[in-house]
Length: 252
Image (tube, rainbow, N blue to C red):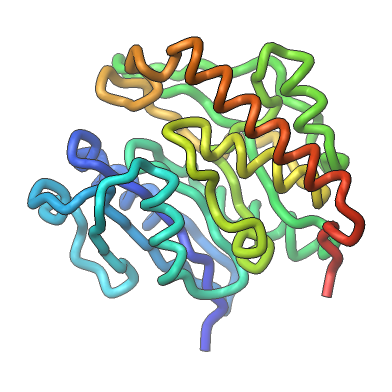
């Protein structure tokens, strides 16, 4: 039996048209012998608008469920995950060639590390890309480093949660993604950092599409009251995990 990496994608109807590009980027991945990917696509809702964009491929598992935003869709999709590793891929983003292999190598070569991230580039509507100049050096990220940076830089993490690659048992132990209307991936990232060292790969691993329909471009995403509440619970959870005796990822 092959070793499996499960790629999880939450999708809602407005973003379904980008799924073929995400699929193309998956098909361009080359993994070491004995490794394969599976793609879990979970619709946030129960419409007829998403399924036509899901490619016909035996490696793809498609599901639908009650609308509850990306956190719930990803966590429900996690029920169909196989293998030791889970990779996040948003429906409107694309992996760069070699991204999965680099993530896999980082965790296989460092069994004491629980999760990995990589450099991301914004993919702009005109097809150009823009980078972020605050990336950390390639290599391990100390436990707690993400929270420290996030607090010191106006709630911006130095690594992108949309690039996350994580050990499935650790992801399940933390309950999947936080039950928040937004920033659920940041909440998971900070929780992972609270209990485990991570890894950053300096080579670009993700093209993060910027387009008018994306959730983070909507006015509600920057509502001050909700934003403050989201960030307060994210920080409190991460600090509580960090303070708990025994809540540390250790290699088997």
